[in-house]
Image 1 (cartoon, rainbow, N blue to C red):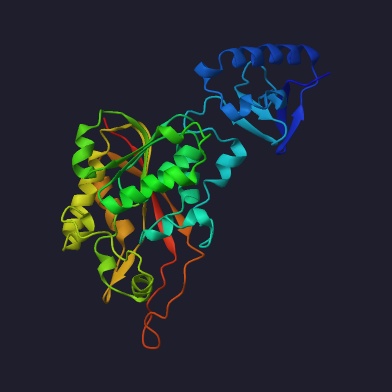
Image 2: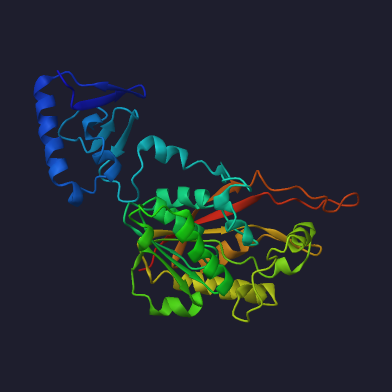
Length: 350
């Protein structure tokens, strides 16, 4: 007898052997397949439907609302409106620390990315997009740089919108999407890159348009200080600061003014983000001269105080491939900051 219903005991999946229950389970699976769009069954599960069974932890056919994927030994809950992940995949993404994953500096598809002075790997942003969206959802990166988020969207079948003020980075982003995404990827043409000022452009966007917002904004004007890394980039004829444009937030002189403008902008994103959906802001703490700024904490408090977003947690992205420099040696402690903070907010607008 082929089994169409599974249960779980002591963290292991077992088939239910009752023939009548398996007949009912097969009927239910046929109904799910027939109504796959309405129910929202992930495409990848449809492609392996022969390896999918119905699942309920106690084997109760009347309460079964999940799928067991035999070759993955995990389940997918049909009531999951957030993402397309199985229970096993979901669990691993709740760990608060994860390691940076890149293509390697010499990889041909990393040459555009490294031209930005503060990029984040499309593979890292891809993980966040996978957790906070489902296939065909629409994602915004309002400080898109060289389009890491849009590249990830194309790979994961999401609709991406990126807004970038700097014309050079905007053009590099367009070149990146053209050259680094295979032409047969169906979501390649569904990526939109806009050369604009995000603070002004989002006023034109309709309410409740996006399913997810993810970005790494400028870290104030810290790149103006030419440290070891900045001098190295200058010697290699790479950009070592964001831009010279007056509208660039990195050129705001006072840290407090910078925080006010940035937090007000993110608060305004509540309108264009669907209710209860998420916004991830990737930031690092930093040092300027002899002062250390807890940027992630300062920004989080400012945003939450405005009452449109609630901070749900922070994930730490360990940048294990960064170079180490002798800051402060041999006189004082100066940290090599080798992690970024992923601030995870949920939209709670009324």
